[in-house]
Amino acid sequence: MGGVWQTILQGDAVSRSVAILLLAMSVASWVVILWKGWLLRRAWKDVQTATAGFWQAGGLDEAQQRLRTFDPRRLVLPLIEAARTIEQAPAHTLAAAGDRSQQLTRVLRDALHRVLHRLQYGQVLLATVGSTAPFVGLLGTVWGIYHALTEIGVDGKFRIEQVSGPVGEALVMTAAGLAVAIPAVLAYNVLGRQISRIEADLEGFARDLRELLLHDGGSK
Image (tube, rainbow, N blue to C red; front, side, top):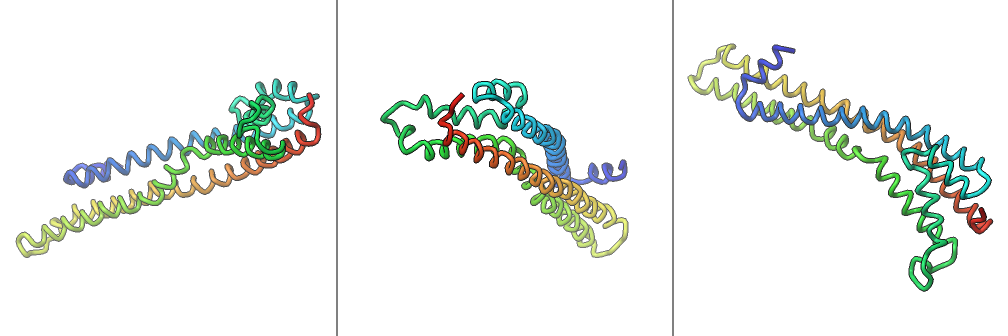
């Protein structure tokens, strides 16, 4: 590892800039990976606990009170709060327009989108790192090869010591770009699958909640 850093530090400003950029991308992606891995694991458990607690409640008031304990990350509770806002919607406004079914669909959809936006936070960064890191490494590779060719062209003679440094730098940059991109791509796919599973559970709960409120009129 020390030899890798020595090779990088011996490069010029462009090579060092590429190395620093790859390091920053790697640190940022690993922070997101570890944080989202923990968050999504807890979120899935919270959704299961919260929905089970909701259906065991005797009414909406009791269910809403339970979810303040069972849903600390507020994944299910916003759906219930949104559904109950139609009861306080001012008359003669667009918010109160349409029948109860349309109002419930609108508020539940909007609440669900806000929850999913929080769950998907960081996915764009992982996708960006996974797609761009190899090209950043390739930039360092091309720059290293350019240095090697420049060294040969200075005196027109080829000596291994002239090109060993720049070529070694180029190979290091290629490997670094792949080392940064591969974990980000894998994490993006794995975390995306976990988000999809939570999303399916929340959508199912939203549909069930809508049907419940339509049939009993939101009775407590």
